Amino acid sequence: MTNVVHGGYLSKYGGSGFLANWKLRWFEVHEDGMLSYYVDASKTEKKGTYQLDHETQLGKHPDMGSSKFCIRIVTKEREIFLSCASEDSRMGWMKMLNNSCEAVKEVYRDSLVADATKNRALSKVEMDFEKLSIKQKHMSSASARSSIDDALGFKESDKMIPGSK
Image 1: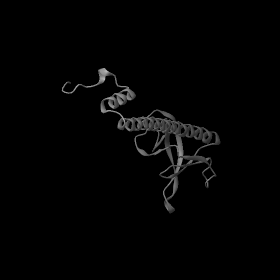
Image 2: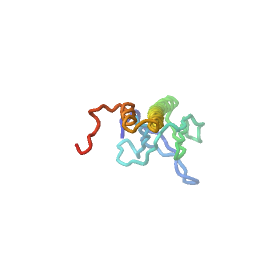
Image 3: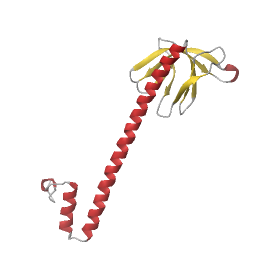
Image 4: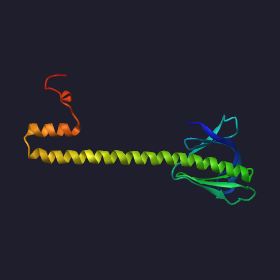
């Protein structure tokens, strides 16, 4: 796990039906978008983790009964309701959660750009190779091989002589 950028007590809404209730838990936001929570600040008993990512929705949520200053987080896996002690606390948590989501989104965007750039480069090499293959049909095999080697950037010293290593 990466560095913790924010931590503190929040109440988490959990359970279902008649068993649904709010429990005070120790939460930590990590710089890689991981939101972890524990029974208390000693962190001896981890209760769970949520991965915040480029699809995570985050926002203020209306008060839920006696719980005020609520935050709603929607991940791919689930919907999470948290309650803060004050509006200032909610704003601080929202800022940290949002920053964490944005950092993960930036990494995701960078990986998409890198993949697209790589795919464009591969497509160009494939097109160049196909053009050279078409030329090869119209040339003698020795001169075609030489043209392909030149296009791919091979030097004479890079070429392997049959039977040598």
